[in-house]
Length: 305
Image 1 (cartoon, rainbow, N blue to C red):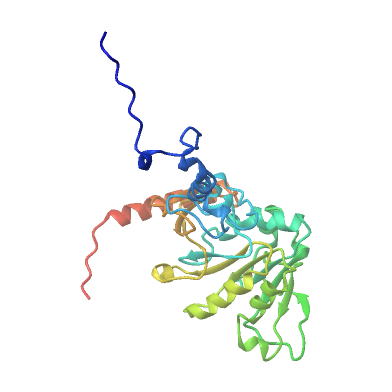
Image 2: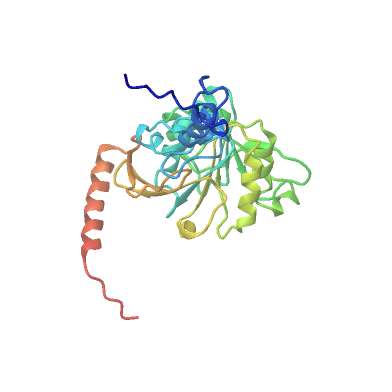
């Protein structure tokens, strides 16, 4: 009978003590850290509210205020007008529809019992039109910082306006000395933390450091703060986290370009339908003027200068 060879024992240096025990894969030991990194990658705002991915809209650190326009809210970080920050609106000229754009948010602030302030409107406001939008006209405060008529303190007085203009509004004028800085009252209102919403028409050619001061002051303002500026500054940097370009888009329509936001750029402008304030005849005239303007735009112009 053939002998069966005995099994060969493994050399001592190849013996693995405890090899019969089960060890979990190393990847599972790192799983909590991996999951945390993946979570931050998907939602960086969980690490800090000021962080966002380049292809996503940023989220505001505090609840945004709905604009009243669903199409616009869908393109604004946080789903509405930011609080504790400036919203910069660039206008080719006053009266393109900026008040009607802001009216839903401003009226909501009033109905919540908060004060709404207008700083340096470029023309007399229509109390009848404001009331038609839902404003409580008696509770509005208009501040004229560029008319220094007071000596030692602020005073509330009726705003003198031509027939059809604002009646029943309070107007505050800066005291002598403080009025030398036209942004002093606006900065103080933002810092106070007691104002519901602010709308200000800023002076032209404003230095960037002054806008940064207003943005810092807005951190104390628990509400939207809108500043109107000239369209010529569209290519300049800004401290405001949100910058929109406004342009009339026809009768009761507004074209809105998102020039800066916490998120990816928006190439196509938005077209918003505004609350109607024109009569039917005025809307027809506006439509015919828009058609004539479009025809002229398509024409060829020769400059002999």
